[in-house]
Length: 149
Image 1 (cartoon, rainbow, N blue to C red):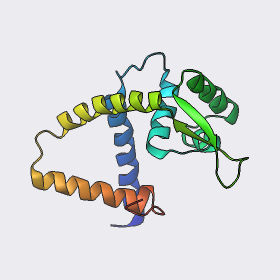
Image 2 (image 1 turned 30 degrees about the vertical axis):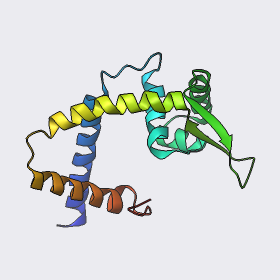
Image 3 (image 1 turned 180 degrees about the horizontal axis):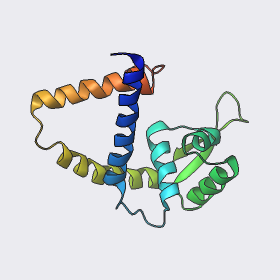
Image 4 (image 1 turned 135 degrees about the vertical axis):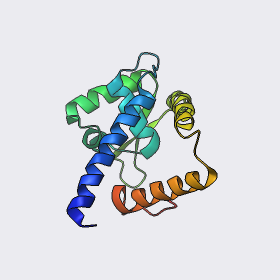
């Protein structure tokens, strides 16, 4: 397959990923958290610790908007900032215990929906899906990251 055809398939795939993610998370209401704040919490949950610029970049928010939303999440007790051990000027963000509990609950609901989508898959197909996801992650989505880290 040539790279242009592969790219078109990739675009189709990523669009489908966004649609499925929306379907899996659309009705998940978390206390007084807005959809933008949920996106931040979800990103922090899977990538922590992160910096404000990481959040701004990944969530496509301006730095002032990301900072404002992060302040609101901190005031709700859902995330916290802390200084890097090697450079006290560098600030990181992580979920608080309350934020982690909230995201664990949200991911639990998403997991139920995910399992419903794959319910009819055989053990062999589940293994194949797992291998495909790992291959995509390692070669396309995060090629610099080691499989175990």
